[in-house]
Length: 428
Image (cartoon, rainbow, N blue to C red):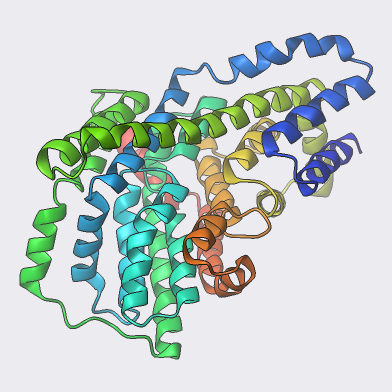
């Protein structure tokens, strides 16, 4: 009952329009006060500060900066051109291009909203100019942007690794196959929707254009190799890899493509700072909220409730997924992770669920949350760019949500889909 009341109060605050970071903080304070534990509130500042001082979390602002530099430096245009030459001839044409471009860009940024707001503008303009329905263009742009935090690098994986102690390198490798499956599922959905609506497709593949565009995009596509290769070879940590991604993007933008000027940097840095502050404030507040959950023994109550329902892996995993998807309807993806990880960390230990697999499951579930109202950040990002209402965008989203949901179920119930690669490269 205590668990239901705490999360009920939190959701009420969110419905009242209270920012998620503030809502978590107020809920934690009210819980301690009503439980007669007001003296514990002297720990608020210390717990919030401690939640943000991990070396691993330094990767977040640098991956955000890398995405902003790539969006400004013309790198996204080159990726789009290559993707168009590669898959533009498949039914659905630029819809397929949209997905492939997002998969390539996801190996450089790690943030879904950066993909939706940066690369998404290029994708939607091209689709609109070629006769595609605006709602279709907006929906596939929002859906494809969620591949970004699954294919490495990934900001949610960095946060999950920070909170659980799981190797970020293993998490990055675990996201490769599920991310590719997400792309395949979205491409299949686009194919059938486009065929049903008779959307156009590009001319047959031009090998000369494919080679030219591939050459143009070759240096940007070296970013994932730099990041993953550096981590796996032991040359640098995930945090240091994020710094290298920024330096590489800056080098390409200033010296190779000459599309970033010194006067552009203050705006890029300010956008990065403002986004980072929002994320870190949520992490700080969630640190205090998660500590409160542990003090109130909420994880133990959840384990007791789940074991009373069933001790079967499939049933427990289905319940956890349902909870994550429900939270995703009301909370931003990172907030879902920060709120539920302190609870579910004890659960996965009790039920012997692999923590690497569970990190991928949580991230996939939070990606679905980015696409569902009332608090779908990618929906809002794309809606603000296109002017398509949230309601119309949500209706158009269902085929793509179904595709991502099928991938989520596959990863949840066939662990080797995500564990094969990290076990092969790094061992168990």
